[in-house]
Image (cartoon, rainbow, N blue to C red):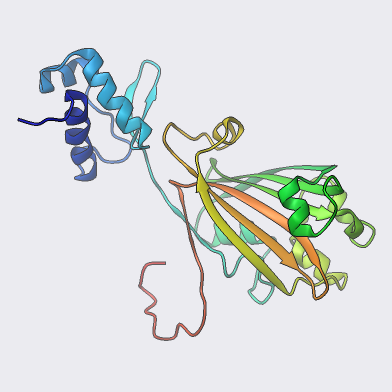
Length: 257
């Protein structure tokens, strides 16, 4: 006889059903009353098991519609190509990558002068509390929230690249725009971390219970000093990043991207 609580047993069986394809992505689970009968369990026990699966990000609930298996259509981001000016692009990197994948991009913008947070000031090598330009993007793939991107530029850069303060998109991408002015990004340093979302992140990215976010911080440099600090926040269940480093001629084209 299992020593696990009954609700864990309910969750274990349903998890196997989901992973095994009995309930594929987008499928609705049986009603609570049907699950009560199946597992000879109380409503509270069934609900506790379902709550456990929701906390793992496997299912979601809608008022009056029951529980549904989450769809996980993962978007692949090649971080080596992202903002790399040696790769051909039509517009900015986000639009190019999403369109190339056969998906539909959409994004909204907010631009403001703000105080650089401590972690940004450290990366830009400016005094804490310094003024910075914040370009904030809320990005979608096929109308599904994909990421938020907050890029801070140091105040000294504004006099050299005034379009950074203009609202709306810079069609060719900010990295190409600065390069056209002789302000060339010659390298970047990436940091990748994961944590649970803040309430604002959960709202903007429509993240369900139990789903973490992936944080990608990229600091871009000219030959002399840092140019910008970009923090991209992804839904971890819908995104996967990869890098290309070195000679990959031995890698098959049909290997996982």
